[in-house]
Image (cartoon, rainbow, N blue to C red; front, side, top):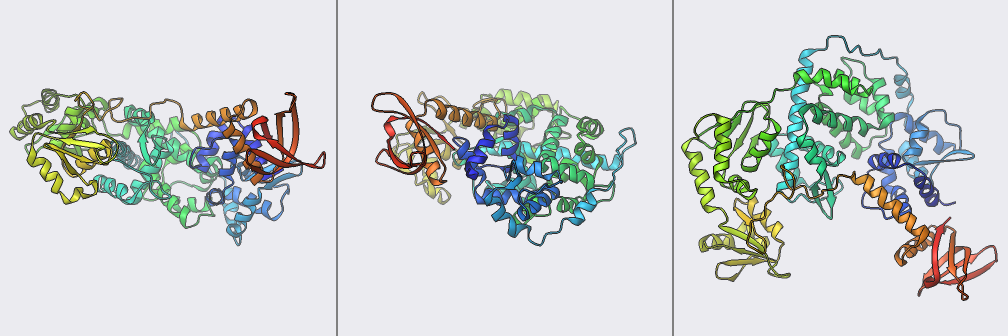
Length: 595
């Protein structure tokens, strides 16, 4: 039996929960069409290497033994984790690494010593007493870090809504996007990459084509309370370690002086340069969630590693900043929130104000662009004025009144409509000819290749959405309009933003459901594409194929062959039982089964 068939068969028999856990840890790219496609992705050398370097110490030690002595009775419980990860299989003779696993693992495991890690892992750690008085100063610092991280994730979500964030390179997020958000949040690039990773792991962003879009999980995160958001982040961080890694990290930590960085390196001894970046991100995330302060683990981490999330929540809750419902509106168009705002207030404020500084006391700013965004979302200038007056409990400064009136008067002056396909895919129109001339001559906009279509209109070959975001990035205030001339709101659903992936279903669960449906279809009434895929997989992997087809009399017959070619609508293969080569017309094949 080939490794591909063996793994595909194993995957078919797993529960949906097991498959979701596998996809989360292996981070499979793309959208596999069936179980063979998924198995092929998991057995790809790059995927295998990425999984091996992330193994916990006991898993790496177990793999080392299996590579040296396949089928040996490995006593370490790391073997179960290796099977769950799709790196090892078990038959009547015992556990064995897949051929590609062994090939890639040998040079990685060569010269590695796991004795120190195993010795440290057997140390006896005393139980944490929840009734004991915790270090309040440490918990206070952890709470501030946890709050600021939640706020940063919120900013990331809004940034994905307001910009075209595309997939770039192996990390998935481009340097320009990371730098833009890092500058905005006043964080390091590594910290921001950690936020992107968390958002991706929590499936708040989803890749459709080559662009990242928000999901309803992002809306759920933004609508949750502070402590609920913290729980989401904490659970995900623990889950990213894997069950074995989480258990071993707990064994290696001794409060209060142990080095969390050293513990993580001991838990993941195969970390290479690539994983080194991920370990750095894990450390940054731990600091941001409140799992570590000044490099030392906190009681929150220890409790969560033991599965005591409720106890950790109760410890952290009193130290989180209290919500406010007030705002200081200043004449320089800045808005100062003396404390974190409640979710409904934050939601409506973000429609017409841009945040400048993310902290316990945050600073926002009004501008023509931000107020225009609020008007696009359906607010009126009077509604914006009422919100600001209510929050500040006093009349608005005169410059703010001027801005609101001016923005309302200029709203819709520059409009973007859907054009024809080709050179005029987007059409810009305005009654202000000077504004159109400015856009036409703006050197920053040369990549759009705008040209005059007629008096009062410009055209470009780019899509309206791309033009809309591009103009906004350079300070212009466009609006999109539909065929009737009505303004298209940037909010497609929800109170927070452009959540275009609206299904409540877990994306990974939806993928698994689709894979199972494809597998059932192939076994019952496959279409031509299904048949061709299965046959080509069997030929490529030199795997036997059971073929059911109709003979010339219309009766259903079945042959078991080793396929060799699929040419001109005919399948050729060796029938070992009859010791002949058969040529079967594809049009008469009803179904196939690999193996």
